[in-house]
Length: 109
Image 1 (cartoon, rainbow, N blue to C red):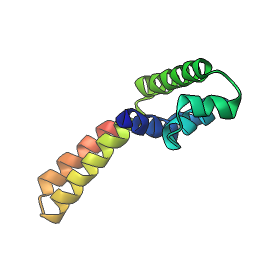
Image 2 (cartoon, one colour; image 1 turned 135 degrees about the vertical axis):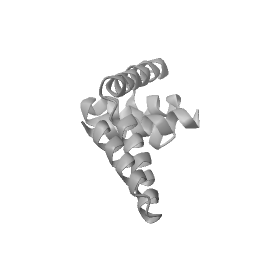
Image 3 (cartoon, one colour; image 1 turned 90 degrees about the horizontal axis):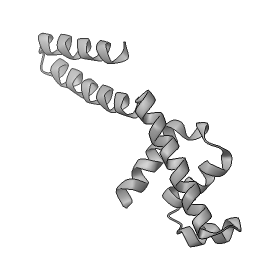
Image 4 (cartoon, rainbow, N blue to C red; image 1 turned 120 degrees about the vertical axis):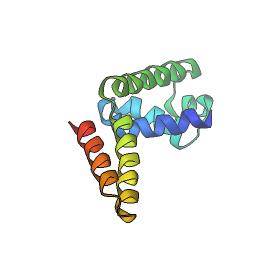
């Protein structure tokens, strides 16, 4: 469950602006503030089931954005390649630097 909340928080960082204010707020209460469905329902004045449905719907939207755009995966790949580039550079491995740079170019297009 904690892994899911961490992933939702990451998805919100990248794609949260594509959600409605209410969807973003509900996900933030659930993932960032670790509020239960009942607590959120009480604050929002809606049913627990309504909160659950809204959170599931918003989470699916965020996952769909990542499936289509892949920004998080690209970021992870680029960070890994940057580490590879820095490591190769620090050891004076010219071919490793070139290889990492070429991989970075292929990721960014």
